[in-house]
Length: 424
Image (tube, rainbow, N blue to C red; front, top):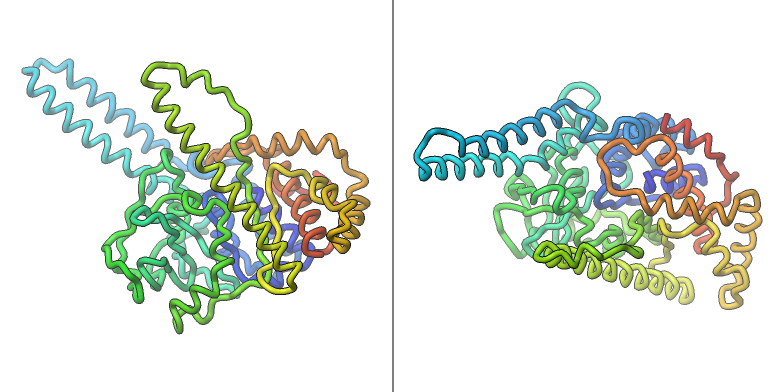
């Protein structure tokens, strides 16, 4: 929803016509896959794009994905029954060793069933947001003028695998084709949040990889955010891929500007009292350690991106860009540059942005930011108010930040009712 709000602004501002690629990880890949399949983003005006994405926005807000199909609930019921059956074996009038053997077999069956939850999730995506009658669409049915790139992480070397309608590529595997891979499978791999979903194993033979350094027969895929939570590396390194996989990759679009929309709110302050629990606290402590490492890694990536963008601006060459980061309000960047003498052009645009935001409650936006960053990753319905709030937050934040940093146009501030109507 947050990514969709930024795309809505770009379409209203006419900047969508200059978009060459959209890369995504995690939940953002649901939106990216839908836009690539259902809308020719660069060819639509704002109202046209809004019409195209309304069914998707309504589905996410009002019904969700995984919980909105009967197959999910049938699968959950089967898991529960299998587990109950495994436990019930201990009450059978059999010798204890036989009961132990049967219990272990039943537990193995249950574990195999549990490993299918990634497939169940992908099927739910297909039924709720991608399929429109008939067979679920394939990845290669995305063929607009934009490279819609779904990023997953392969655990063999901890690097991205990039899925799109025209290619599949990875540094180790090389350059390949999407073959008959379903769109919902690529999206699910990109959004396979560790813990919630198991590793998704995909064979490499159908993709026909060439010019790689490894020839493993399978990819071990999890959420693209494990490697690069902002999906920025695709756009930042297109030139390197064109050199590495020439001539197959010569058609890749190399961007001049990079807009990074990050819906991860970061850790924030939280209670750690549970870490005192013996044994359990040690496991929770390791998970907390992982979160700290992850949070600091993404923070350093953001700082590095801002530094790169600023150098390009000052030197007049290189990749320019800006961040649209969910913990910010639309006032934050304009206030930062409002009196800056180092950046006179940004100072003037910041003052224009603040005048444009004159009708907004700056203090009230702190509550909206808190609400937005508190929305957890969820595949159930988000609800009308939460969805509309995320959309409007991203829309206004994208407009303010991109105007100040890159000079993108200011358009009339949309009322909340517009976004409520979009998701209702």
